[in-house]
Image (cartoon, rainbow, N blue to C red; front, side, top):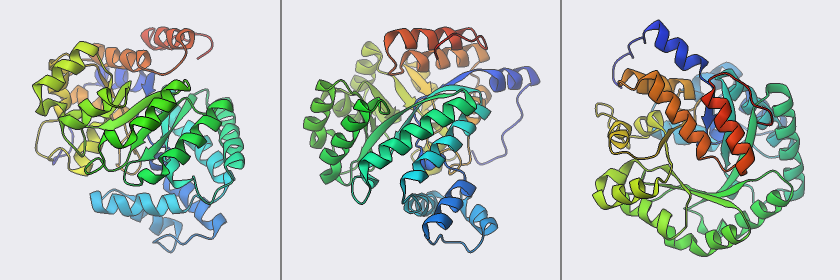
Amino acid sequence: MTSEPRPLPPGVEAAVAAMPKVELHVHVEGAQRPDTVWAMAQRNGVALPAPTPEAWRAFYRYRDFAHFIQVYIAASRAIRAPRDFTDMLVAFHADQAAQGIVYTEAFLSASLYVEGFDQGAVLEAIAEGLALGRAQSGVVVRLIPDIARQVPDTQRAVLAFTLAGQKAGVFIGLGLGGLEAGYPPALFTEVFAEARRNGLRVVAHAGEGAGAESVRGAVEALGAERIGHGIRCLEDPGVVAMLRERQVPLEVCPMSNYRTGVVAADAPHPVFAMLEAGLNVTVHSDDPPMFDTTLTDEFRFLARGGVSPERLRTLTVAAAEASFLPDDERERLVARVSAQGGRAPGV
């Protein structure tokens, strides 16, 4: 991570670029380009920590984790009106399409929006953004609102918002994100149980900012069907054995882990050991523009680490199989990415 990445052989580069992709771990807010955020801020009268669009673009570039937090907070504060959700989602679809992504399940930081927003208007704006984005790009995006652990008092409001969005056809599940340390899964068991009873799919960030016990808690206490990150599962062979036996999908985001310092810049990424251990690994980008990455770059990283194009394709199929789509739609998605460029109807 400390040196300029070496180029891939032309055939491998072409295969990675052309591969139809599935993304299951990306945050809508963290996936916004600086110009989209600038336009929202100007429209909403929100001051950004830069005086011009050019200065904002320069400020937006990744420097270190502390600076990333500054950028994320500034960008999130620019979101003030229902129209912002529409604009963000249309732009998000376009960026996904540019990478050959055909299907995405994206997180929405719902703890930010449960106060001070007209929930009905926000849901209408989200529905409009999803419809416009799909019509313009061909990419299918489903959304998963998530609870920020560090504000556990928002969990009931986030659940209510998510259930309303489920009825409106815009939300597919409930997630748990934010700071792991000090906010164990046990704080959220009742809300997750209620979500499952209401037919929501459930996923939790775990094993990133806290250790393997966080992963076990997300699976056993919350019933999480997928784990966001999960790389610190390797700290406990018992957790590794559980994940391998159950084949719980792990949403691994290599560049994010390097950027946040969870993995040291000069250390090999745990994803390679996770693959060797027979875990159900899928690969994603987390907050791509803010971390100066893309999903295509994540696959390039694995290829440079010795993962073959054929194995990369199996990881894409694994992501499709781990999606929260209804069975018939998921089967069509799996067929589409397995065909490597062929189109199947409906997804």
